[in-house]
Amino acid sequence: ALGQVVSGLGSLGASAMLASYSRDDERQADALGQEYMVRAGYNPWGEVQLMEFLVAQQKARPSALETLFATHPMSEERLNDARERAQTQYAAARDLPLLEARFMDNTAALRRQAGTIRALQDGEKYMGKKNYREAAAAFDAALAKAPDDYAGLLMMAKCQAAMERWSEAGRYAAAAKQAYPGEPQALYVEGYVALAAKRYDQAYDDFAAFDKALPGNLIMTFLRGYCREQQDRTGEAAALYRRYLEAGGQGKPAQYAYARLVQWGYIRR
Image 1 (spheres, rainbow, N blue to C red):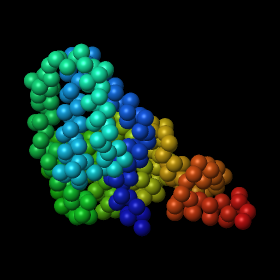
Image 2 (image 1 turned 135 degrees about the horizontal axis):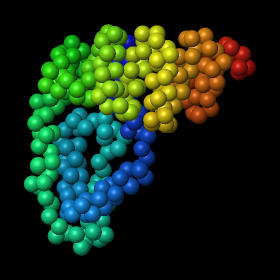
Image 3 (image 1 turned 90 degrees about the vertical axis):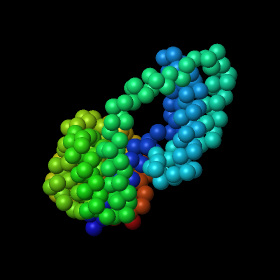
């Protein structure tokens, strides 16, 4: 049963982080992006062109950026706001160069990783179809080209977890964490893998570290409570379950937490 939960790590982990940013944060990021472009000597219409490209991609290839657009769609509203800023606030910068050559120079290293990126995309497609062996082969091919690639290591960890190969999943998750220290999704995956392997102290620490790095994801409170419950630390588990419920936890985790609090006598029906 836990394997089925962990198999959803990809979408759940990414969505948890993306959803933590509000629409106001989104608008601020768009506005600051244009401001920084102008300060650096770029034409503000460059951001407009990027947004036009993303809107077109969203319509033509909706699966390509599915997770990102699930919570923060590249809407016509955002595109129109960028156009308005370029026409009004930054009208004086309309003749600044787009600096395509500088962009191409600065992204040359990324283009050299095209083979790795394609292999990762293939792996993601297989993961979506639950063809985990094929996904693992694709991720293996990507990591052969870029052994320390954070995204590749993390995807392979999720793939191994989906096959309930906990030892391998833990190894790749730890390598991802080492490749990009402080990035929260590796903590999230490593925590789930540790939980599946019944290493509750490590799982608790990973979930706590994730919560510190990216506050506001309620499920982390529930999972920490679950870890403490499995360690027979009922008082700590109850406090975390209560906090989870009071903060608005919903669904099966909320039902589980409530049932435990009733069973332990913390809540009377």
